[in-house]
Length: 160
Image (cartoon, rainbow, N blue to C red; front, side, top):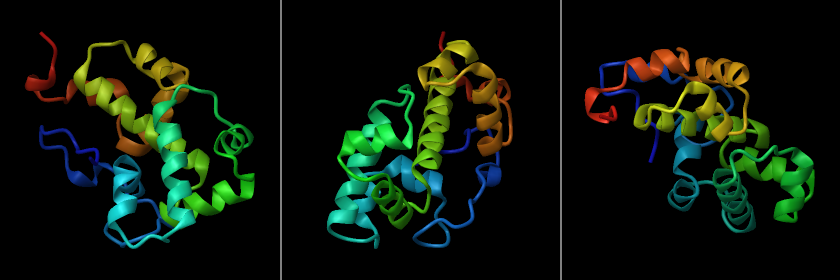
């Protein structure tokens, strides 16, 4: 499922398009990543081994977001060379491995901010970042701080 802007009327363009993304011109990398690996099965991305490797890489990153990934550790975990990991993700989602990881982490932060009352620092730790870096990365994608994002969430998503 793709991340949706808050239901409070925040415009869809609050999630920026990122240049250089693969696939259809109206899809954003954050859409592709959040739907991976399912989207890989439904779209015209490279077939065969490349697609299979992308699914493996994205599932691994999604399941272990807080891990301090490096390109070396990711390549070792999926039994590919560093350059092959880069080629696979750029061919399928149009992003480097670390850009994919950053996008997955920001999306997970948004889900946690919208559905829990965890402090921003705890949300940041849950995705493997310190609060200061997490806030900068979050703002770069959503155009607002995590605190501002949380304030805008609809009342039905608020705990209590």
